[in-house]
Image (cartoon, rainbow, N blue to C red; front, side):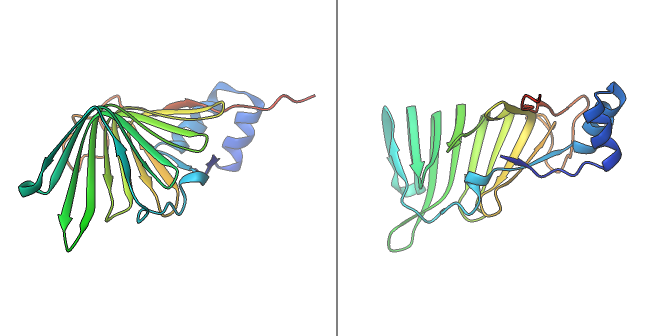
Length: 189
């Protein structure tokens, strides 16, 4: 995972020096945090979608499928897991998935990267996955936590902010909402 947020030279030097003020300055410059997840870049959203669940209900007239119980969906190395999912599709001479709404312990993995949240939305048309509520991104020793994460499957860029799940549409942040995390540092001689 490559962290793509920009840190000024002053903040970088202060962080390396280990000063508390430098770390606080760097934290301010990184919010909302932007991360580039290499394994998610150029994900093939047109690849076949495989699914498994304890229960599946087809609602053909509503153009949706309800999956519940240990739902596991995979697509070109991307794995989406949750307790429940709704797959919305359109029937244009064949089924074309438009969106997957997931809730209940949502986990998205690809390669060594793992993102999780309370709710997830995979928009196939926009090629974006949004996770909301108790969001966590993990890759190796690096961690990033926040209220909402938007993953662009074309660029691999992920944006995390402190917005709470209950925020109003168009709201860019919430009082007290913060992004936090840990960067792993290699041992030096």
